[in-house]
Image 1 (cartoon, rainbow, N blue to C red):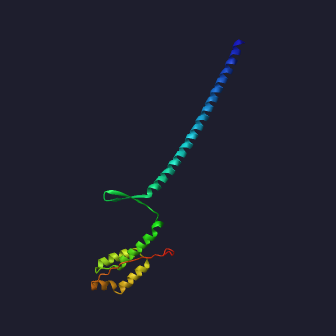
Image 2: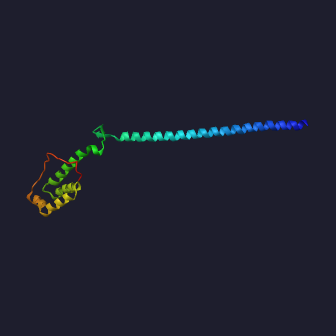
Image 3: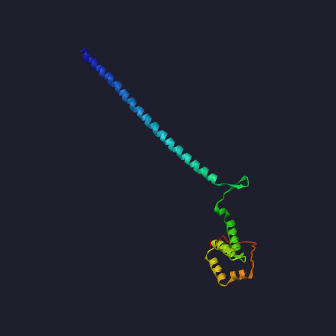
Length: 163
């Protein structure tokens, strides 16, 4: 009878030890799982912060332009197109009129200037060019050996009306 009691006691002790080991493995697995989830969330947060900061830095860098002038780099600042629109429009109109109306008595120079001017204009300038060509204006300039030069003193552009 004594050996049977010892076996029962031994079985109960081993069962408690095995139950504690299973409980320890289960809690360790839960801890590792929670730790892994926290690490993954932290990695995603870090990636998001790095991505936002890199976009912010690239936007800041794009506002600066360096121009090489001789041996020196000069820092210039970029502005939006809307900030420079009045200056660009006035310059565009001025250049168009200079190319269109400054003529030398050379057919190649006239064609080069007019192609630049027509590239900058719409269909109305092309119609005016065709009118002048049909009336023989350009051939008269070449035949008369006349140089025509335009000097622009001011340009006014109305920005309230879109073309």
